[in-house]
Amino acid sequence: MIRHTFKMLWRKRKSNFLLVFQLFISFVALTFFIALNVDKFLAYFKPYYYNYDHVWAISLGLDKVPTDKAQGYVSAIEQKLRAMPEAELVSNASLIPFYSWPTDEKAVIQNNKLSFRTFIADEHFNQVLELPIKKGRWFTKDDRLSAIVPIIITEDLSEEYFNGQDPIGQTILLSGKKTRIVGVTAEYRDNFSREIGGNGKGYIFKPIGPDTTGSAILVKSKYANNFFLMEGKIRKVLETIKDDNFTVRNSSPMNMVKKMSNKNDLIQLTLALVVFGFLVLNIFLGISGVFSYAIAKRRSEIGLRVATGAVSGNILKQFLTETIVLSSFATIPGAFVALQFIIAGFFGNLSLREGMLGVAGAALFIYLLMIACSLYPSLRASKIQPAEALYEE
Amino acid sequence: MIKLTDVEKVYRTSTIETMALSKVNIVINKGEFVSIMGPSGCGKSTLLNIMGLLDEPSSGKIEIDNTLISGYADKRLAHMRNQKLGFIFQSYHLINDLSVVDNVEIPLLYRKGVSGSERRKKALEALEKVGLNSRTKHYPNQLSGGQRQRVAIARAIVGNPEIILADEPTGNLDSVMGEEIMNIMLQLNKTEGTTIVMVTHDENMANKTERVIRFFDGRQVN
Image (cartoon, rainbow over all chains, first blue to last red; front, side, top):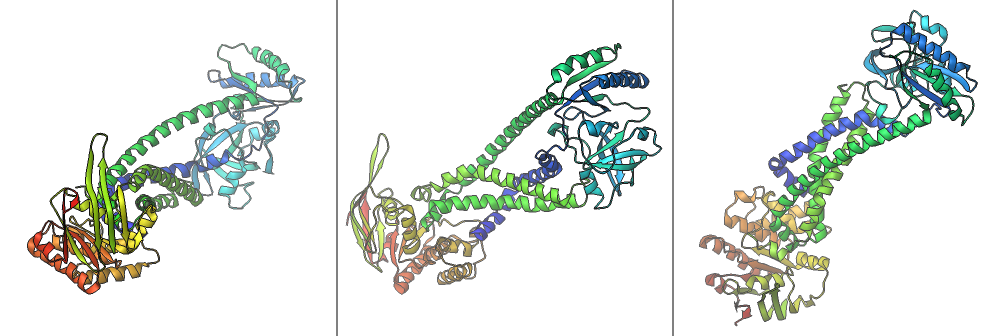
């Protein structure tokens, strides 16, 4: 039956060309989209390797404040926060999980020219968030003045680009400057909408330098459930900075920051799904219409098949098989073309595994969509009365 | 072979009731070549559809090969059509996107246990019987009307059915081609013993068959 269907469709390839071409383009685009995002999707199911439960996050607006002044303000705030009996540790960084977006920086790692997501962090950051060190060490105060900037990479970056070699001590070019890897942390992950930028895998942490300061301050609380007590004290500390250009963008517990971030993700995802759903519905209606028209033109063929012994199940199977074969005319060359692009490195660091997952996801979507589009017209075809169909002109 | 007893067919709409067949009683014996004649709209094709199990009578009984056809599920009727019946239509009903040999194979696609190579072998044999073995790879639109009808005959006989139901098989053909088709059917009837029921408007063709059943306004008149 497959051979019979294949022959029929091959013969009709010219009239089906536009539909197949549309499916081919959609399939390739969908493959790339899935391949480029599959790790971000899968990362969502991974655990957070850090702990934010007892952390208070402050984001400062320092854009309009000169660097030397900003450093002074941050240092003063840090000192006062450290003096609070409830504060166990205080860290200055450019990173607040679920709140900050990373910076994209170009890097050359083991001959791979990629862009990576980077953050700056001080020597207390990993302790505040309890981010485990897998190899080497975290930053020390001396790193701020080091001639070759020390950096710390995440474990996924290490695994992806160092192929089992020890990355500690290796130098890489980051934004054209020589840097040396001094440590490897557990994987860092954020909420979905913040997993953007950088075509390289993983994150890079840089130390706070003599001329830089982070706009984020993280305070780890000594005691659980004392945030209400801390809130007033932190507000008072922040109010000591009297400068019109200095603003406090956020001051709240990390749990709250995450909740807000989840809410934003949900809104964005819902909007994206609504738009995507609307597009899919339009495609569904369009292709269903094409199938309905094509099947209506084949009523006498259906009548003949029933006259020669086909039951309604055979007719349904015939049209669904045609749909699958027709989709395969697009997906098989589509998979070949998409994988060629991925293998040739057209998308930078995309691995064959990601490419294969992209192909599988795109194929699943295209086949399900096409089967859904053809199901109703095929069901109607299977109910056609042969005595009527055979005598229609 | 085929026995119709008090068969009636009524088409009903919300306002009109049309009696297409009224109290039809016909017995067609094994190996007979019978033609059914009558003016347009007298119920000939309806009768053929009922004999071919493509349509249900409103009342009455149908027996094929001494088997009473009553309350059969679609699957059983389809099986009977596939095993015992072959159809030839005035407008051929060939699938233009399939080659001649693939068209002939169609009834065997719905027969269990027939392999691809066996299907091909039987289809080529059927095409040889109708003298079309040189056109097996052609497509229907590359053939003349007579050749197309020969393909349709090959498709009807490929499964070795006991009965062939032909609805105006020469209706779209000129007299020479019509003769050719008629001769093939006569040959089949004579050499293979196939029972043939043919609906026709052509008195000459009907006279070549063993028996003529005439219809007028849904009634059998002889």
